[in-house]
Amino acid sequence: MNHLLRSSAPISDTGWSELDREVQQRLLPGLAARRLVDFSGPHGWEHSAVDLGRVAGIEAPGKALRAGVRRMLSLVELRADFVVSRAELRDLDRGAVDLDLGAVDAGARQIAQAENVAVFHGWASAGIVGITEAAGMPPITPGKKFADYPKYVAKAVETLLSAGVSGPYGLALGPDGYTGVVETTENGGLIVFDHLREILGGPIVRAPGVRGAVTTGVARSAGASAA
Image 1 (cartoon, rainbow, N blue to C red):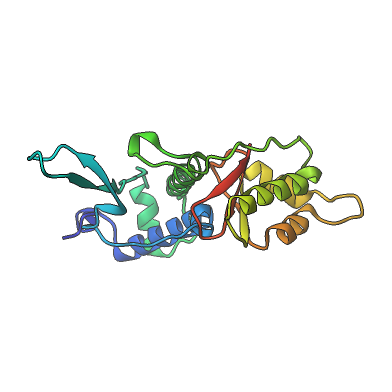
Image 2: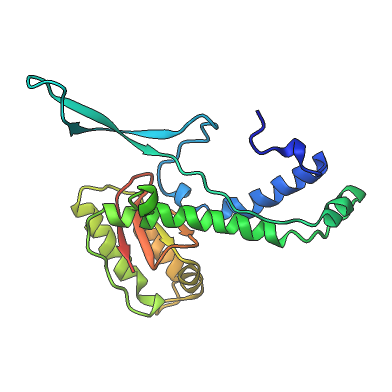
C-alpha cells in the first residue's frame, strides 16, 4: 500500500522526483545527531517500537509468581505539511529549473531540527530522554568568547573519560556556535575549529536545534553538555 497516497496527488513522476531531491538536499545536512550516535534504519512502515532490553515489574496473577513487562520505546511519526503551487509543478514538467520550493525547504529543516532536539535534549511527550538528560553530568558553562571553547571542550572530554566513556569524541554545535567557532582564531593564529578537532579526535557538526554545545563519545549514547 502507498501510505503517502502519491498516486492520488496531481503530481507527475518528474514532480515527485524533484520534490524528493529537494527534501534530501535540505534534510540530510541538518540531521546532525545521526553523525554522532548509533543510527539504525529505515525499518519500514510496520516497525512500531524499539526494544529497550529491560523489564518493568508488574503484579503477578499468583502469589508464587513474579511478572515483568518488556519495556519498549514507541517510534514517533513526524510530518511537516507544505504547499507547492500546481503552476510551479507544471512549469517543472515543461523544463523549468528555478522552482519556488521554499515551503518544502522549510518543512525539511523543521524535521531535521526536531530530530536533533529530541536526540540531544529529549522529547518528554514522546517518552524520549535526550543525551544531555541521560548523561547525568552537570553542564559546563562556557564564556562568551569562542576562542575559549577549547578549554571548555577539553574539560568536557575529561569528564567523559572519568565516566569511562572512551573516544573519539564529537561535538554538536548550534548554528550560531558553529559559525562562531569556524570564524574564530586563537592567539598565535590557530583556528579554534582545528584545535577542537585535535582535542576531540572526532567530528564537529552543525546541529540546528542544539542549545549551546554537546560533547559526546562518537556512536555512543553518553554525553557532556556545555550550555
